[in-house]
Length: 423
Image (cartoon, rainbow, N blue to C red; front, side):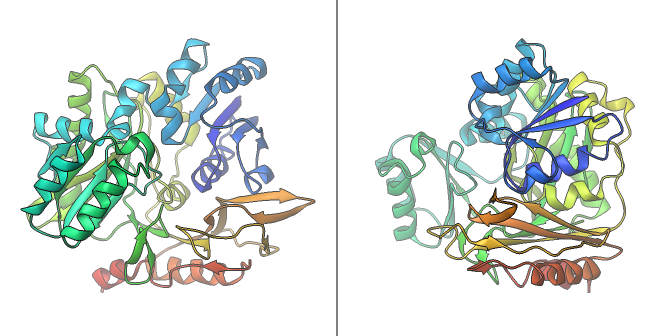
């Protein structure tokens, strides 16, 4: 089969590497891909949001199945467009992708159907939002309504920070139109868990749980990023918690979307907070998380293509989704200065050989004359799979130490909370 993957980061590299293991995959094209992905698939210089060119390419190449990995093309309707020209896809249509495309929509959905989440208010006026914040308890959470590359959330410690966040989003338009509306919600406490689920609108099949580390600095200090590292499974996500999440959150969300006429088929991501009052939804994503994918898919033992095809066809109930009981860790190596300003173009030196349980997933790099150079904020993920989490973390950090590029930075405490919990 000819497969097309839309996207160009570490998540897409991970998906490509897992798809390559499928017995039914002959060729993989990635649009636009990156310098690291080019070693594992054919990269085509078509942007992930250029739906016209994506559809033309799919028809011209006779693509048998497409995987739409990033949020932007999903929200823009890439699946609808490709389905219209006869290409089956993994990913939700635009009507269902709104669950990530609009935080106002998703919060209202949870309120309507009784799905546990933080108390909130929505605003379309900065004056009204600021007036509300004057009498609010702190800390408080401010979220841009639309897509913002994982950076549209501010945890404000006091009114001054909250006011600045509102003005930045609504008046300065730092997130563009995504900041035209805001969700302001209560600050929840507890361990965070990411659970990615395959769903075809009939059943929900969760993947192994994971824990992301969003802040740039050790000890969860500094600004939010797209994610600086992950571990799986998440030790806070016990069998009892999983059972409760299925009953109170996962299935109710699927049924709610069905009731709204927005049947979700694809990967539905649940960002959860295990609060003292039980698990609550922090956010939904309409696709694989990044960098959660980098630790979840290496643990998948089933054929990814078969699972994706079943999800698209509505036959997921008849398809096995099996994960290893091992542990995985991902250390994200970034360019110094990320997530604000950073320099690119530095040569990346990778180890000549990798052990069977080691992976390097490239996120932001370009290839020139047989060499790799940095071209993004998050450059790559050093990943290891081992029998236990301590072993996986030790191996992943040892791998990161064998990778070199100028101005490289990475957190030294990925998995620290998980290890403390295990002890």
